[in-house]
Length: 591
Image (cartoon, rainbow, N blue to C red):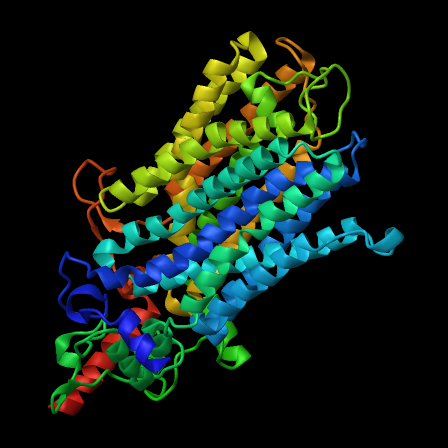
Protein backbone atom coordinates (compact mmCIF):
# COMPACT_ATOMS: atom_id res chain seq x y z
CA UNK A 1 0.00 0.00 0.00
CA UNK A 2 2.85 2.37 0.80
CA UNK A 3 4.34 2.14 -2.71
CA UNK A 4 0.89 2.51 -4.29
CA UNK A 5 0.18 5.41 -1.91
CA UNK A 6 3.32 7.29 -2.98
CA UNK A 7 2.82 6.67 -6.68
CA UNK A 8 -0.82 7.75 -6.58
CA UNK A 9 -0.37 11.09 -4.85
CA UNK A 10 3.18 12.15 -5.59
CA UNK A 11 3.26 15.54 -7.29
CA UNK A 12 5.23 18.79 -7.37
CA UNK A 13 4.60 20.15 -3.89
CA UNK A 14 6.55 23.37 -4.52
CA UNK A 15 4.02 24.42 -7.12
CA UNK A 16 0.80 22.78 -6.11
CA UNK A 17 0.36 22.59 -2.37
CA UNK A 18 -0.88 25.46 -0.28
CA UNK A 19 1.72 24.73 2.38
CA UNK A 20 4.39 26.29 0.18
CA UNK A 21 5.69 29.86 0.02
CA UNK A 22 5.74 29.75 -3.79
CA UNK A 23 2.30 29.29 -5.35
CA UNK A 24 2.39 28.98 -9.13
CA UNK A 25 -0.69 28.89 -11.33
CA UNK A 26 -0.23 25.40 -12.83
CA UNK A 27 -1.68 22.36 -11.11
CA UNK A 28 0.01 19.05 -11.73
CA UNK A 29 -2.46 16.52 -13.16
CA UNK A 30 -1.92 14.19 -10.20
CA UNK A 31 -2.95 16.95 -7.81
CA UNK A 32 -6.51 16.42 -9.06
CA UNK A 33 -6.57 12.88 -7.65
CA UNK A 34 -8.01 13.88 -4.24
CA UNK A 35 -10.68 15.85 -6.10
CA UNK A 36 -11.60 12.82 -8.20
CA UNK A 37 -11.73 10.58 -5.13
CA UNK A 38 -13.98 13.03 -3.30
CA UNK A 39 -16.00 13.52 -6.47
CA UNK A 40 -16.67 9.81 -6.88
CA UNK A 41 -18.27 9.75 -3.46
CA UNK A 42 -20.34 12.80 -4.29
CA UNK A 43 -21.34 11.15 -7.57
CA UNK A 44 -22.69 8.24 -5.53
CA UNK A 45 -24.54 10.66 -3.25
CA UNK A 46 -26.25 12.33 -6.20
CA UNK A 47 -27.05 8.99 -7.79
CA UNK A 48 -28.46 7.55 -4.58
CA UNK A 49 -30.71 10.51 -3.77
CA UNK A 50 -32.06 10.96 -7.29
CA UNK A 51 -32.40 7.26 -8.09
CA UNK A 52 -34.45 6.95 -4.93
CA UNK A 53 -36.90 9.56 -6.21
CA UNK A 54 -37.33 7.40 -9.31
CA UNK A 55 -37.49 4.12 -7.40
CA UNK A 56 -40.10 5.23 -4.85
CA UNK A 57 -42.99 5.34 -7.38
CA UNK A 58 -42.02 1.81 -8.42
CA UNK A 59 -42.02 0.67 -4.78
CA UNK A 60 -45.38 2.36 -4.23
CA UNK A 61 -46.83 0.57 -7.27
CA UNK A 62 -45.64 -2.83 -6.06
CA UNK A 63 -46.52 -2.66 -2.36
CA UNK A 64 -49.16 0.09 -1.98
CA UNK A 65 -50.67 0.17 -5.43
CA UNK A 66 -54.09 1.56 -4.50
CA UNK A 67 -53.10 3.95 -1.71
CA UNK A 68 -53.99 7.52 -2.63
CA UNK A 69 -52.19 9.03 0.34
CA UNK A 70 -48.51 9.83 -0.14
CA UNK A 71 -47.83 9.55 3.59
CA UNK A 72 -45.69 6.40 3.28
CA UNK A 73 -43.43 7.92 0.63
CA UNK A 74 -43.18 11.16 2.59
CA UNK A 75 -42.09 9.21 5.67
CA UNK A 76 -39.44 7.36 3.66
CA UNK A 77 -38.12 10.66 2.29
CA UNK A 78 -38.13 12.27 5.73
CA UNK A 79 -36.32 9.23 7.19
CA UNK A 80 -33.63 9.59 4.52
CA UNK A 81 -33.25 13.32 5.10
CA UNK A 82 -33.24 12.90 8.88
CA UNK A 83 -30.45 10.35 8.54
CA UNK A 84 -28.62 12.77 6.25
CA UNK A 85 -28.93 15.55 8.83
CA UNK A 86 -27.61 13.26 11.57
CA UNK A 87 -24.72 12.06 9.40
CA UNK A 88 -23.68 15.60 8.51
CA UNK A 89 -23.48 16.81 12.09
CA UNK A 90 -22.01 13.60 13.54
CA UNK A 91 -19.30 12.98 10.96
CA UNK A 92 -18.40 16.66 10.78
CA UNK A 93 -17.69 16.55 14.51
CA UNK A 94 -15.87 13.20 14.27
CA UNK A 95 -13.69 14.53 11.44
CA UNK A 96 -12.48 17.33 13.74
CA UNK A 97 -11.99 15.02 16.69
CA UNK A 98 -10.49 11.87 15.14
CA UNK A 99 -9.26 13.02 11.75
CA UNK A 100 -10.49 13.25 8.18
CA UNK A 101 -8.84 10.05 6.95
CA UNK A 102 -10.36 7.75 9.58
CA UNK A 103 -13.89 8.86 8.76
CA UNK A 104 -13.56 9.17 4.99
CA UNK A 105 -13.58 5.51 4.01
CA UNK A 106 -15.90 4.39 6.81
CA UNK A 107 -18.83 6.57 5.74
CA UNK A 108 -18.67 5.26 2.17
CA UNK A 109 -18.71 1.67 3.41
CA UNK A 110 -21.80 2.54 5.45
CA UNK A 111 -23.49 4.01 2.37
CA UNK A 112 -22.72 0.93 0.26
CA UNK A 113 -23.95 -1.45 2.96
CA UNK A 114 -27.14 0.54 3.50
CA UNK A 115 -27.85 0.69 -0.25
CA UNK A 116 -27.55 -3.09 -0.46
CA UNK A 117 -29.87 -3.31 2.54
CA UNK A 118 -32.49 -1.23 0.71
CA UNK A 119 -32.15 -3.39 -2.40
CA UNK A 120 -32.74 -6.59 -0.39
CA UNK A 121 -35.74 -5.29 1.58
CA UNK A 122 -38.87 -7.40 1.21
CA UNK A 123 -41.96 -8.68 3.01
CA UNK A 124 -40.41 -12.12 3.41
CA UNK A 125 -42.26 -15.41 3.14
CA UNK A 126 -45.99 -14.95 3.76
CA UNK A 127 -45.43 -11.56 5.35
CA UNK A 128 -42.78 -12.70 7.83
CA UNK A 129 -41.18 -9.27 7.50
CA UNK A 130 -42.38 -5.76 6.77
CA UNK A 131 -40.85 -4.10 3.72
CA UNK A 132 -41.96 -0.66 4.89
CA UNK A 133 -40.10 -1.03 8.19
CA UNK A 134 -36.95 -2.27 6.47
CA UNK A 135 -37.07 0.56 3.94
CA UNK A 136 -37.36 3.13 6.71
CA UNK A 137 -34.41 1.63 8.61
CA UNK A 138 -32.09 1.25 5.65
CA UNK A 139 -32.99 4.65 4.23
CA UNK A 140 -31.99 6.21 7.54
CA UNK A 141 -28.63 4.44 7.21
CA UNK A 142 -28.33 5.58 3.59
CA UNK A 143 -29.01 9.12 4.74
CA UNK A 144 -26.28 8.92 7.39
CA UNK A 145 -23.77 7.79 4.75
CA UNK A 146 -24.80 10.50 2.30
CA UNK A 147 -24.76 13.17 5.00
CA UNK A 148 -21.33 12.17 6.24
CA UNK A 149 -19.86 12.75 2.80
CA UNK A 150 -20.79 16.44 2.74
CA UNK A 151 -18.43 17.79 5.44
CA UNK A 152 -15.71 15.23 4.74
CA UNK A 153 -15.47 15.80 0.99
CA UNK A 154 -15.67 19.58 1.35
CA UNK A 155 -13.10 19.82 4.14
CA UNK A 156 -10.61 17.42 2.56
CA UNK A 157 -10.81 19.20 -0.79
CA UNK A 158 -10.39 22.66 0.74
CA UNK A 159 -7.44 21.58 2.90
CA UNK A 160 -5.57 19.85 0.08
CA UNK A 161 -6.30 22.47 -2.60
CA UNK A 162 -3.87 25.33 -3.30
CA UNK A 163 -5.35 28.72 -2.52
CA UNK A 164 -5.53 29.90 -6.12
CA UNK A 165 -7.41 26.81 -7.30
CA UNK A 166 -9.45 26.04 -4.19
CA UNK A 167 -12.75 27.40 -5.54
CA UNK A 168 -12.52 25.56 -8.84
CA UNK A 169 -11.51 22.28 -7.21
CA UNK A 170 -14.40 22.43 -4.74
CA UNK A 171 -16.80 23.34 -7.55
CA UNK A 172 -15.53 20.30 -9.47
CA UNK A 173 -16.31 18.02 -6.54
CA UNK A 174 -19.81 19.44 -6.20
CA UNK A 175 -20.34 19.08 -9.97
CA UNK A 176 -20.20 15.32 -9.52
CA UNK A 177 -23.57 15.44 -7.76
CA UNK A 178 -25.58 16.54 -10.83
CA UNK A 179 -23.56 14.04 -12.85
CA UNK A 180 -24.71 11.35 -10.42
CA UNK A 181 -28.29 12.55 -10.77
CA UNK A 182 -28.08 12.34 -14.55
CA UNK A 183 -26.60 8.85 -14.30
CA UNK A 184 -29.46 7.77 -12.03
CA UNK A 185 -31.99 9.09 -14.51
CA UNK A 186 -30.31 7.45 -17.49
CA UNK A 187 -30.10 4.12 -15.67
CA UNK A 188 -33.80 4.32 -14.83
CA UNK A 189 -34.63 5.09 -18.47
CA UNK A 190 -32.65 2.05 -19.62
CA UNK A 191 -34.19 -0.23 -16.99
CA UNK A 192 -37.74 0.93 -17.81
CA UNK A 193 -37.15 0.60 -21.55
CA UNK A 194 -35.80 -2.94 -21.16
CA UNK A 195 -38.68 -3.94 -18.88
CA UNK A 196 -41.28 -2.42 -21.20
CA UNK A 197 -39.90 -4.40 -24.11
CA UNK A 198 -39.83 -7.69 -22.21
CA UNK A 199 -43.62 -8.18 -22.49
CA UNK A 200 -43.74 -9.92 -19.13
CA UNK A 201 -47.16 -11.04 -17.90
CA UNK A 202 -46.21 -10.52 -14.25
CA UNK A 203 -46.10 -6.72 -14.07
CA UNK A 204 -45.68 -6.53 -10.30
CA UNK A 205 -42.67 -8.85 -10.34
CA UNK A 206 -41.09 -6.90 -13.19
CA UNK A 207 -41.52 -3.52 -11.49
CA UNK A 208 -40.25 -4.99 -8.21
CA UNK A 209 -37.00 -6.03 -9.89
CA UNK A 210 -36.71 -2.68 -11.70
CA UNK A 211 -36.31 -0.51 -8.61
CA UNK A 212 -33.78 -2.95 -7.16
CA UNK A 213 -31.66 -2.67 -10.30
CA UNK A 214 -31.90 1.12 -10.36
CA UNK A 215 -30.67 1.46 -6.77
CA UNK A 216 -28.23 -1.45 -6.77
CA UNK A 217 -26.17 -0.25 -9.74
CA UNK A 218 -25.15 2.77 -7.67
CA UNK A 219 -22.94 0.53 -5.53
CA UNK A 220 -20.43 0.17 -8.38
CA UNK A 221 -18.97 3.72 -8.28
CA UNK A 222 -19.05 3.53 -4.49
CA UNK A 223 -16.88 0.41 -4.48
CA UNK A 224 -14.38 2.08 -6.80
CA UNK A 225 -14.24 5.21 -4.65
CA UNK A 226 -13.73 3.19 -1.46
CA UNK A 227 -10.47 1.66 -2.73
CA UNK A 228 -9.01 5.09 -3.43
CA UNK A 229 -10.30 6.76 -0.27
CA UNK A 230 -8.30 4.50 2.02
CA UNK A 231 -5.17 5.59 0.12
CA UNK A 232 -5.65 9.29 0.88
CA UNK A 233 -3.31 10.45 3.68
CA UNK A 234 -4.40 12.58 6.58
CA UNK A 235 -4.66 16.29 5.91
CA UNK A 236 -1.35 17.93 6.91
CA UNK A 237 -3.36 20.86 8.24
CA UNK A 238 -5.18 18.52 10.61
CA UNK A 239 -1.93 16.90 11.74
CA UNK A 240 -0.30 20.26 12.46
CA UNK A 241 -3.26 22.19 13.86
CA UNK A 242 -5.14 19.43 15.71
CA UNK A 243 -2.74 16.56 16.37
CA UNK A 244 0.14 18.96 17.09
CA UNK A 245 2.29 16.52 15.14
CA UNK A 246 4.41 18.43 12.61
CA UNK A 247 6.76 15.46 12.20
CA UNK A 248 4.00 13.21 10.86
CA UNK A 249 2.66 16.09 8.80
CA UNK A 250 6.15 16.52 7.32
CA UNK A 251 6.40 12.80 6.59
CA UNK A 252 2.96 12.60 4.95
CA UNK A 253 3.62 15.75 2.96
CA UNK A 254 6.92 14.29 1.75
CA UNK A 255 5.03 11.18 0.66
CA UNK A 256 2.56 13.39 -1.17
CA UNK A 257 5.04 15.72 -2.80
CA UNK A 258 8.53 15.63 -4.18
CA UNK A 259 10.15 18.51 -2.25
CA UNK A 260 10.37 19.50 1.42
CA UNK A 261 7.48 21.60 2.70
CA UNK A 262 7.21 25.13 3.98
CA UNK A 263 4.21 25.41 6.25
CA UNK A 264 1.60 28.08 5.55
CA UNK A 265 0.89 30.99 7.80
CA UNK A 266 4.49 31.43 9.00
CA UNK A 267 7.35 33.61 7.87
CA UNK A 268 10.39 32.02 6.30
CA UNK A 269 12.32 33.34 9.29
CA UNK A 270 10.27 31.02 11.47
CA UNK A 271 12.14 27.96 10.21
CA UNK A 272 15.61 26.78 10.96
CA UNK A 273 17.32 24.67 8.29
CA UNK A 274 18.85 21.42 9.44
CA UNK A 275 21.05 19.86 6.83
CA UNK A 276 19.07 19.64 3.60
CA UNK A 277 15.64 19.60 5.22
CA UNK A 278 13.33 22.21 6.68
CA UNK A 279 11.80 21.59 10.08
CA UNK A 280 8.21 22.61 10.73
CA UNK A 281 7.76 24.62 13.95
CA UNK A 282 5.88 22.87 16.76
CA UNK A 283 2.30 24.06 16.90
CA UNK A 284 2.18 23.67 20.68
CA UNK A 285 3.75 27.09 21.04
CA UNK A 286 0.86 28.73 19.22
CA UNK A 287 -1.66 28.10 21.96
CA UNK A 288 0.37 29.78 24.68
CA UNK A 289 -0.80 33.37 24.38
CA UNK A 290 -4.18 34.86 25.12
CA UNK A 291 -5.75 37.64 23.09
CA UNK A 292 -5.70 39.68 26.31
CA UNK A 293 -2.14 40.83 26.99
CA UNK A 294 -2.89 40.85 30.72
CA UNK A 295 -2.89 37.04 30.73
CA UNK A 296 0.22 35.01 30.04
CA UNK A 297 0.28 31.29 29.49
CA UNK A 298 2.99 28.74 29.12
CA UNK A 299 4.43 28.52 25.63
CA UNK A 300 4.21 24.75 25.85
CA UNK A 301 0.42 24.74 26.26
CA UNK A 302 -1.09 22.77 23.34
CA UNK A 303 -3.81 24.42 21.25
CA UNK A 304 -7.35 23.97 22.51
CA UNK A 305 -9.22 21.64 20.15
CA UNK A 306 -12.12 19.21 20.41
CA UNK A 307 -9.53 16.69 21.66
CA UNK A 308 -8.53 18.92 24.58
CA UNK A 309 -9.97 18.72 28.08
CA UNK A 310 -13.61 19.69 27.88
CA UNK A 311 -13.07 22.85 29.93
CA UNK A 312 -10.34 24.07 27.57
CA UNK A 313 -12.41 23.14 24.52
CA UNK A 314 -15.49 24.84 25.95
CA UNK A 315 -13.50 27.97 26.74
CA UNK A 316 -12.03 28.12 23.23
CA UNK A 317 -15.42 27.54 21.60
CA UNK A 318 -16.98 30.34 23.67
CA UNK A 319 -14.10 32.70 22.92
CA UNK A 320 -13.96 32.06 19.18
CA UNK A 321 -17.68 32.00 18.42
CA UNK A 322 -19.13 34.36 21.03
CA UNK A 323 -16.44 36.70 22.34
CA UNK A 324 -14.89 37.27 18.91
CA UNK A 325 -18.30 37.31 17.20
CA UNK A 326 -17.77 34.44 14.78
CA UNK A 327 -21.17 32.95 15.61
CA UNK A 328 -22.47 35.27 12.88
CA UNK A 329 -20.53 33.38 10.23
CA UNK A 330 -21.89 30.03 11.44
CA UNK A 331 -25.43 31.41 11.66
CA UNK A 332 -25.05 32.90 8.19
CA UNK A 333 -23.91 29.68 6.52
CA UNK A 334 -26.48 27.57 8.39
CA UNK A 335 -29.53 29.80 7.83
CA UNK A 336 -28.62 30.47 4.19
CA UNK A 337 -28.38 26.71 3.57
CA UNK A 338 -31.71 26.09 5.34
CA UNK A 339 -33.51 28.68 3.21
CA UNK A 340 -31.80 27.43 0.06
CA UNK A 341 -32.84 23.81 0.59
CA UNK A 342 -36.39 24.80 1.48
CA UNK A 343 -36.77 26.32 -1.98
CA UNK A 344 -34.47 23.94 -3.86
CA UNK A 345 -36.15 20.78 -2.63
CA UNK A 346 -39.50 22.53 -3.00
CA UNK A 347 -39.19 22.86 -6.77
CA UNK A 348 -36.91 19.84 -7.09
CA UNK A 349 -39.42 17.37 -5.72
CA UNK A 350 -39.36 14.87 -8.55
CA UNK A 351 -42.61 13.11 -7.70
CA UNK A 352 -44.33 11.91 -10.87
CA UNK A 353 -47.37 14.13 -10.38
CA UNK A 354 -45.25 17.21 -9.69
CA UNK A 355 -43.22 16.71 -12.86
CA UNK A 356 -46.30 15.89 -14.93
CA UNK A 357 -48.03 19.01 -13.61
CA UNK A 358 -45.01 21.10 -14.58
CA UNK A 359 -44.83 19.44 -17.98
CA UNK A 360 -48.56 19.80 -18.59
CA UNK A 361 -49.14 16.05 -19.05
CA UNK A 362 -51.02 15.26 -15.84
CA UNK A 363 -54.21 13.46 -16.80
CA UNK A 364 -56.03 12.22 -13.72
CA UNK A 365 -59.75 12.69 -13.21
CA UNK A 366 -59.85 11.68 -9.54
CA UNK A 367 -57.65 11.24 -6.51
CA UNK A 368 -54.90 8.85 -7.56
CA UNK A 369 -51.82 7.12 -6.13
CA UNK A 370 -48.52 8.99 -6.29
CA UNK A 371 -47.16 6.89 -9.15
CA UNK A 372 -50.15 7.55 -11.45
CA UNK A 373 -49.95 10.49 -13.85
CA UNK A 374 -52.40 9.28 -16.49
CA UNK A 375 -55.58 7.31 -15.78
CA UNK A 376 -56.69 7.10 -19.39
CA UNK A 377 -57.22 3.59 -20.82
CA UNK A 378 -54.25 1.97 -22.54
CA UNK A 379 -51.54 3.77 -20.55
CA UNK A 380 -49.31 1.25 -18.74
CA UNK A 381 -47.16 1.68 -15.64
CA UNK A 382 -44.09 1.43 -17.87
CA UNK A 383 -45.30 4.33 -20.00
CA UNK A 384 -45.83 6.47 -16.91
CA UNK A 385 -42.44 5.60 -15.39
CA UNK A 386 -40.69 6.31 -18.68
CA UNK A 387 -42.40 9.69 -18.99
CA UNK A 388 -41.47 10.55 -15.39
CA UNK A 389 -37.80 9.79 -16.08
CA UNK A 390 -37.80 11.89 -19.25
CA UNK A 391 -39.49 14.78 -17.45
CA UNK A 392 -36.96 14.64 -14.63
CA UNK A 393 -34.02 14.50 -17.03
CA UNK A 394 -35.16 17.62 -18.86
CA UNK A 395 -36.68 19.72 -16.07
CA UNK A 396 -34.21 18.94 -13.28
CA UNK A 397 -30.98 17.50 -14.68
CA UNK A 398 -30.15 19.68 -17.68
CA UNK A 399 -30.21 22.89 -15.67
CA UNK A 400 -28.18 21.32 -12.85
CA UNK A 401 -25.52 20.17 -15.31
CA UNK A 402 -25.22 23.55 -17.05
CA UNK A 403 -25.14 25.48 -13.77
CA UNK A 404 -22.44 23.27 -12.26
CA UNK A 405 -20.32 23.51 -15.40
CA UNK A 406 -20.58 27.30 -15.42
CA UNK A 407 -19.46 27.45 -11.80
CA UNK A 408 -16.34 25.41 -12.55
CA UNK A 409 -15.47 27.84 -15.33
CA UNK A 410 -16.03 31.02 -13.31
CA UNK A 411 -15.59 30.04 -9.64
CA UNK A 412 -12.09 31.52 -9.41
CA UNK A 413 -13.13 34.77 -11.10
CA UNK A 414 -16.30 35.64 -9.18
CA UNK A 415 -16.74 36.73 -5.58
CA UNK A 416 -18.54 33.67 -4.24
CA UNK A 417 -20.30 35.51 -1.42
CA UNK A 418 -21.61 38.10 -3.88
CA UNK A 419 -22.56 35.29 -6.27
CA UNK A 420 -24.61 33.61 -3.56
CA UNK A 421 -26.34 36.86 -2.62
CA UNK A 422 -27.25 37.96 -6.13
CA UNK A 423 -28.38 34.52 -7.32
CA UNK A 424 -30.63 34.34 -4.26
CA UNK A 425 -32.24 37.60 -5.44
CA UNK A 426 -32.58 36.45 -9.05
CA UNK A 427 -34.15 33.20 -7.84
CA UNK A 428 -36.62 35.22 -5.77
CA UNK A 429 -37.68 37.09 -8.91
CA UNK A 430 -37.89 33.79 -10.80
CA UNK A 431 -40.17 32.26 -8.17
CA UNK A 432 -42.43 35.30 -8.37
CA UNK A 433 -42.64 34.91 -12.15
CA UNK A 434 -43.41 31.20 -11.85
CA UNK A 435 -46.00 31.82 -9.17
CA UNK A 436 -47.68 34.47 -11.30
CA UNK A 437 -47.89 32.06 -14.23
CA UNK A 438 -49.63 29.48 -12.05
CA UNK A 439 -51.95 31.91 -10.25
CA UNK A 440 -52.91 34.34 -13.01
CA UNK A 441 -52.37 33.11 -16.53
CA UNK A 442 -50.94 29.57 -16.60
CA UNK A 443 -49.50 29.81 -20.10
CA UNK A 444 -48.77 26.12 -20.23
CA UNK A 445 -45.67 23.90 -20.20
CA UNK A 446 -43.27 25.78 -22.54
CA UNK A 447 -42.93 28.84 -20.32
CA UNK A 448 -43.09 26.84 -17.09
CA UNK A 449 -40.47 24.29 -18.17
CA UNK A 450 -38.15 27.01 -19.47
CA UNK A 451 -38.29 28.90 -16.19
CA UNK A 452 -37.73 25.71 -14.18
CA UNK A 453 -34.64 24.84 -16.21
CA UNK A 454 -33.33 28.38 -15.78
CA UNK A 455 -33.99 28.06 -12.05
CA UNK A 456 -31.93 24.87 -11.86
CA UNK A 457 -29.08 26.63 -13.66
CA UNK A 458 -29.18 29.46 -11.13
CA UNK A 459 -29.35 27.08 -8.17
CA UNK A 460 -26.28 25.10 -9.21
CA UNK A 461 -24.32 28.10 -10.45
CA UNK A 462 -25.11 29.90 -7.20
CA UNK A 463 -26.34 29.01 -3.72
CA UNK A 464 -26.76 25.25 -4.07
CA UNK A 465 -23.00 25.01 -4.66
CA UNK A 466 -21.73 28.00 -2.68
CA UNK A 467 -23.54 26.96 0.51
CA UNK A 468 -21.51 23.74 0.24
CA UNK A 469 -18.21 25.48 -0.49
CA UNK A 470 -18.14 28.48 1.87
CA UNK A 471 -18.39 26.65 5.26
CA UNK A 472 -15.32 24.59 4.32
CA UNK A 473 -13.27 27.76 3.83
CA UNK A 474 -14.09 30.35 6.50
CA UNK A 475 -13.66 28.38 9.74
CA UNK A 476 -10.42 27.28 11.47
CA UNK A 477 -9.15 23.74 11.04
CA UNK A 478 -10.15 22.69 14.55
CA UNK A 479 -13.83 23.51 13.88
CA UNK A 480 -14.02 23.27 10.08
CA UNK A 481 -15.71 19.87 9.88
CA UNK A 482 -18.12 20.57 12.73
CA UNK A 483 -19.20 23.95 11.35
CA UNK A 484 -19.68 22.52 7.87
CA UNK A 485 -21.71 19.66 9.32
CA UNK A 486 -23.91 22.04 11.32
CA UNK A 487 -24.46 24.27 8.28
CA UNK A 488 -25.31 21.31 6.06
CA UNK A 489 -27.54 19.88 8.79
CA UNK A 490 -29.56 23.10 8.84
CA UNK A 491 -29.91 22.73 5.08
CA UNK A 492 -31.36 19.27 5.46
CA UNK A 493 -33.69 20.60 8.14
CA UNK A 494 -35.04 22.92 5.45
CA UNK A 495 -35.53 19.98 3.09
CA UNK A 496 -37.40 18.07 5.80
CA UNK A 497 -39.67 21.04 6.43
CA UNK A 498 -40.50 21.34 2.73
CA UNK A 499 -41.21 17.60 2.57
CA UNK A 500 -43.79 18.07 5.30
CA UNK A 501 -45.00 21.17 3.50
CA UNK A 502 -45.31 19.17 0.27
CA UNK A 503 -47.87 16.79 1.77
CA UNK A 504 -50.39 19.59 1.30
CA UNK A 505 -49.82 19.78 -2.47
CA UNK A 506 -52.93 18.86 -4.45
CA UNK A 507 -52.50 18.59 -8.18
CA UNK A 508 -55.42 19.54 -10.40
CA UNK A 509 -55.70 18.79 -14.08
CA UNK A 510 -56.22 22.11 -15.82
CA UNK A 511 -55.57 25.83 -15.82
CA UNK A 512 -57.29 28.01 -13.33
CA UNK A 513 -58.03 25.21 -10.88
CA UNK A 514 -57.71 25.83 -7.17
CA UNK A 515 -54.73 23.48 -6.91
CA UNK A 516 -52.88 25.33 -9.67
CA UNK A 517 -53.35 28.62 -7.86
CA UNK A 518 -52.30 26.95 -4.62
CA UNK A 519 -49.07 25.83 -6.25
CA UNK A 520 -48.40 29.40 -7.37
CA UNK A 521 -48.85 30.70 -3.81
CA UNK A 522 -46.32 28.12 -2.60
CA UNK A 523 -43.81 29.51 -5.10
CA UNK A 524 -44.33 32.97 -3.59
CA UNK A 525 -43.35 31.48 -0.22
CA UNK A 526 -40.16 30.13 -1.79
CA UNK A 527 -39.45 33.60 -3.18
CA UNK A 528 -39.59 35.11 0.31
CA UNK A 529 -37.09 32.47 1.49
CA UNK A 530 -34.68 33.48 -1.26
CA UNK A 531 -34.86 37.17 -0.28
CA UNK A 532 -34.10 36.33 3.36
CA UNK A 533 -31.22 34.12 2.21
CA UNK A 534 -29.72 37.04 0.29
CA UNK A 535 -29.98 39.28 3.36
CA UNK A 536 -28.34 36.69 5.62
CA UNK A 537 -25.53 36.23 3.10
CA UNK A 538 -24.93 39.98 2.85
CA UNK A 539 -24.78 40.71 6.58
CA UNK A 540 -23.32 37.58 8.17
CA UNK A 541 -21.05 35.72 5.76
CA UNK A 542 -17.48 37.15 5.67
CA UNK A 543 -15.56 37.79 2.42
CA UNK A 544 -13.46 35.06 0.84
CA UNK A 545 -11.49 37.26 -1.53
CA UNK A 546 -9.66 40.58 -1.52
CA UNK A 547 -12.07 42.80 -3.43
CA UNK A 548 -10.87 46.27 -4.32
CA UNK A 549 -12.70 49.06 -6.07
CA UNK A 550 -16.39 49.51 -6.77
CA UNK A 551 -16.93 46.23 -8.61
CA UNK A 552 -17.64 43.72 -5.85
CA UNK A 553 -18.93 40.90 -8.06
CA UNK A 554 -15.68 39.95 -9.74
CA UNK A 555 -13.54 38.47 -7.01
CA UNK A 556 -9.95 39.38 -6.29
CA UNK A 557 -7.14 37.29 -4.86
CA UNK A 558 -8.54 34.58 -2.56
CA UNK A 559 -7.62 34.55 1.11
CA UNK A 560 -5.75 31.56 2.50
CA UNK A 561 -7.56 29.24 4.89
CA UNK A 562 -5.27 30.44 7.67
CA UNK A 563 -6.23 34.07 7.08
CA UNK A 564 -9.96 33.34 7.08
CA UNK A 565 -9.58 31.14 10.17
CA UNK A 566 -8.73 34.26 12.22
CA UNK A 567 -12.39 35.25 11.97
CA UNK A 568 -14.01 38.66 12.23
CA UNK A 569 -11.26 40.15 14.40
CA UNK A 570 -8.51 39.24 11.94
CA UNK A 571 -5.10 40.33 13.21
CA UNK A 572 -6.60 41.32 16.57
CA UNK A 573 -7.87 37.81 17.32
CA UNK A 574 -6.30 35.60 19.94
CA UNK A 575 -5.10 33.14 17.30
CA UNK A 576 -3.23 35.92 15.50
CA UNK A 577 -1.64 36.94 18.80
CA UNK A 578 -0.54 33.36 19.45
CA UNK A 579 1.04 33.16 16.03
CA UNK A 580 2.95 36.43 16.41
CA UNK A 581 4.22 35.50 19.84
CA UNK A 582 5.39 32.10 18.65
CA UNK A 583 7.26 33.72 15.80
CA UNK A 584 8.95 36.19 18.17
CA UNK A 585 9.99 33.39 20.51
CA UNK A 586 11.51 31.37 17.67
CA UNK A 587 13.29 34.43 16.29
CA UNK A 588 14.80 35.09 19.72
CA UNK A 589 15.89 31.48 20.11
CA UNK A 590 17.55 31.49 16.66
CA UNK A 591 19.44 34.69 17.48
